[in-house]
Length: 79
Image 1 (tube, one colour):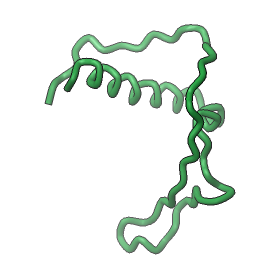
Image 2: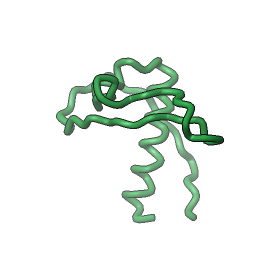
Image 3: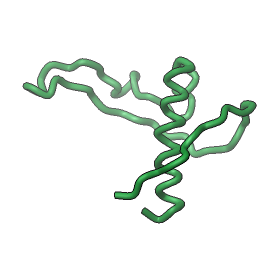
Image 4: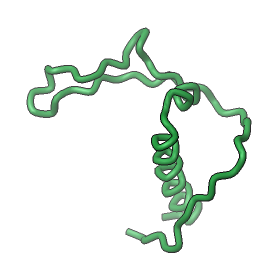
């Protein structure tokens, strides 16, 4: 796998962009037995992207940006 060097994210002013909305559904369960539901994001509890981003803390938004940035760099590099 390829490594990313000299990686940094610099916060800039907020921007508005048009992105496709998506409904994200699923259940988070205990991996030991898969019957204990930790969180249920189905039906009325589904997450709507990108609106769900506004519910994240600043630290969580930074973590999301880092995850997306790594994916973008690798995708644009073709690896």
